[in-house]
Structures are given as structure tokens and as C-alpha cells.
Image 1 (tube, rainbow, N blue to C red):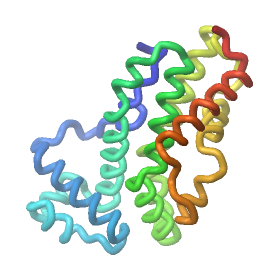
Image 2: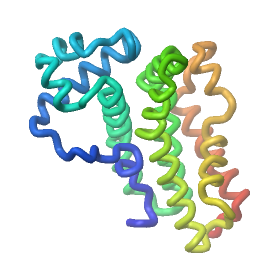
Image 3: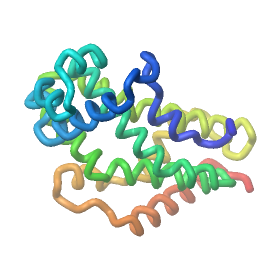
Image 4: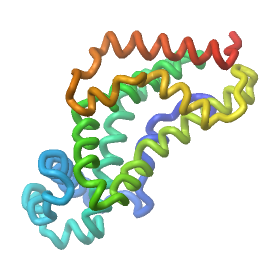
Length: 219
């Protein structure tokens, strides 16, 4: 399976602290934090409100996550895991490199243009001036892991002689740029609606074909 994209691994890396002692409380806290952060922003959301909504004490929240920044990071990991779970089956069904890249691109762009991700973007845009490290936590918990895994997959394909690339990480940037195009800023700013699933699928498939032509995909 090393040649296949493992989205769960790239988008929802397990926390080093290990499995939560009480999964139900963990899920309740993360769900309450998600709602609070997305609705009110990072600074306006309080641990007190999150604990109350989750039905636990502040002490429980702090003992499990340490601080609000780490809790936010865990919310991002959970969002990434939710996205990964939606396309694991589709990824496993892919045979050719083109099929696997299409599945990856559809999942990535679908998540990026989802209401959940747009809410995260709004939180970051509002808070980044006061807390630039918040953006770094978000980047490390999701996009950085994902891009790294995509680069690994392209590097493995190059090693097998399927494509001809000099730098797998740059190639990953190239194909993601083709998948997203130049319209994502307008969507983030609310100037235009996200693309429909049909339009997104057509765009991703076209972009993947263009990319594979550029890198000399072999049958």
C-alpha cells in the first residue's frame, strides 16, 4: 500500500499523548470547541463556555489539552480526520495514479471549499495579527501533513518511472495549484459561492490530466 495515498495518515496524524482515556468526553469537548471557535472566533471563545457546552469542568479541559491553543489544534486535527474518513473508501478503490490523484484532489478541494474550512479561514484571518502562532498550529496540523504525504506519493511514482519530476514537493505544489485555480480567494472573501460538486469534479479531473501530461505520465 506504500504506493497509494493514505489520507488518514496525512490529514489526521494521531496525537502523541495517545488515545484519550474517555473517548466520549474527548469527543464532547472537541465538538463544543469546534462550535465555539467557528461561531465566535478563537479569542472570544472561552474555556468556561466550552466546558459548559461539553458537560465537563474547566479542570477536565485543561488536564486533557493543556491550553486553548492546543485545543484549537485538536479541533483542526479532528476536522482533517472527518474529511479523511469521507474518502478512504474512494481512495482504496483507485488503481491508477490518475485515479488516486483525482480522489485526493476531490477530497482536498471539497474540504477546502466546505463551510467548515471556510469557517476556519475566517477565524485565522481575524486572529492571525494577534496570534501568528495560531496559523502555524493550523498549518502543521493539516496542510503541512497533507502536502508532505502528497509529495511522498509523487516521489514514489517517480521512483517507479510513472512520472518524471525533479522535486516531489514542488510537484505537489504544482498539482494543488491546478486543482484550486485562482478562484479560492473570491470564495474565502464571500464574493462568489463555492463550486458545485459537479464543477469541482470536472476541474480536478482536468487539472490532474494537465499535470500528468506536464510530468510525462507513463501508462
